[in-house]
Image (cartoon, rainbow, N blue to C red; front, side, top):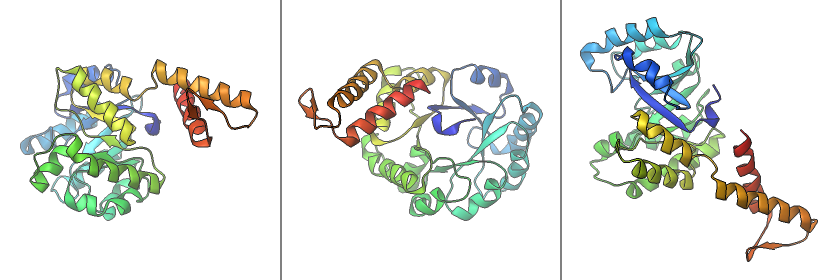
Length: 265
């Protein structure tokens, strides 16, 4: 599982095995089997047993487990050892120490969704075997007593992008949109997250997968621009040159090269 290239992560409840196959067929780059928020407390043990019976090395999934300070964490760690668990998402990740036991078993995706988690963000991002960070906007707002829209949370999003870059891990994963039947809103959120430096977005319904994948893929206009930039730079022989009234310098060339690599991946 090439986690760094994933654009979409689709949640499926761990106690709803009839939905597992549909999630895998949704077009999502990764499926997150969830034994945390999606499963009521009284059904945790049953959900864990269902997932353990279903897991198989032939289908790689991400497993979202309960927070380190919950009574379910120890049993969840046992599940993390099973074949087919390609990565583990830790809910309400707040301290680098919380990740130590998981990182020894599988690559980790800490879900940052509390004030304490943000306060310890750089230490969490730098913990061993962390692949990328994920943003939990709804729980963060609950923790901070906020009633915010997308743009009002951009301070927190920017912190995730910065911490990820400093830790040399993959671009972070944005919080899911609550819009299930509005593909335009999902796509708008995903595109704004991408402009901020995010590389992927969580999804809570299969209908969100396609607009998220589109948003985190190079579009035709981007590819055309990048192709023209490289062609113009190559033709200049290293001399200063402009395209469409704008100077083409090294950062512009590197950005164009990155877009073309994304198209080929």
